[in-house]
Amino acid sequence: MRKAQLKIQQMAFMLMAVTLFFVLVGIFILAFHLSSLKSSATEIEEKNALLLVTKIANSPEFSCGEAFGGEKIDCIDADKVMMLKQNIDSYERASSNPEETFWGVGTNIEIRKIYPKTGVEEICGLGNYPNCNVIKIGSGEMPAEYSNFALLCRKDSYEGKIYDKCELAKIMISYKDWGAE
Amino acid sequence: MDLEKFKGKRAQEEMIGFALIIILVAVILLVFLGISLKSPQKENVESYEVGSFVQAFLQYTTDCRDSNDLEYLSIKDLIFYCNKGEKCSDNKDTCEILNSTLTGITEESWKIEGDRPVKGYELNITRDAEEILLIKEGNATKNYKSSMQDFSKSGNSFKIFFTAYY
Image (cartoon, each protein chain N blue to C red):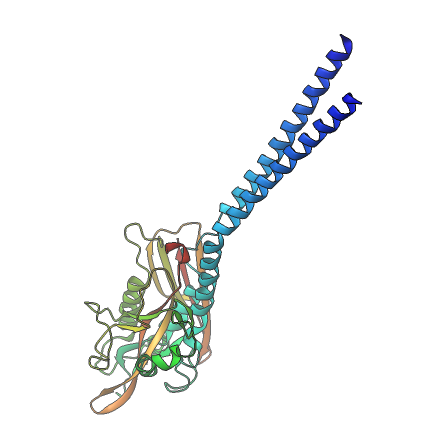
């Protein structure tokens, strides 16, 4: 009788030890998963930025449409973008989250003229446009970004005649880095 | 005496079994940790960048006005004008303007000096497999992204190849 009790006790201790061990392993995995949530969120934002940068130049808010002689691919209408910049508040009011812009959480858009080469960085406003080289949409910083080449077109004049002036630019889309918080 | 020896041996076997389970679980955990920590690397040059670059520079407005002084020519128009041997309205050579503009565009767009991710690039324009223009800078490495655009005019087939090495 005593020997059997001892055996049961031994088995109980063993079962407790094994259970405790697996519980500890489970807690470790759970803790690891929870800590990687931020990096997963950043990865989602990153994918969103990557997808956005490949198609944003052809979206209705940016594209040249047929304003510059036929359909152009990866062409941004600079005049249209300047108007969008002025009215960005109404776009950002579309979401209840103050951090969320029309294009996603922490998404800022920047268009930089590359060629013809211009000297000092000058952010475009209604006062200095088109003699500037950076158009910023959204007031936030650009901590991490994806970029793509695009054509930046506007109407210009030469000896009183209006013509289409297209320059080479880079469009940059920032995304929120949740790990940096 | 034999019974005690047998009991001791069994206890040892149980301990070894338990230790084996712990080692097995630890190995599985390490593998899991390794896979989780291996985050995907961001590419130095994305395919869409190379494709968009070619699309964008073809429509770039150059400083050359056509011979009738009516409009500024795009790079695409300039390729045709250069092919025909025509001049700009200010009598400048269209092939020279094409070469200098494309050299400037590629230099500003794909900087290769220092620790930049892009190591080199090559831009080649051909007419019916005959080379019209070649701009080559930096080193041709094994990692590269390419884009090709073709169009035809007046019975000639033009092809534009751009490769960025990283």
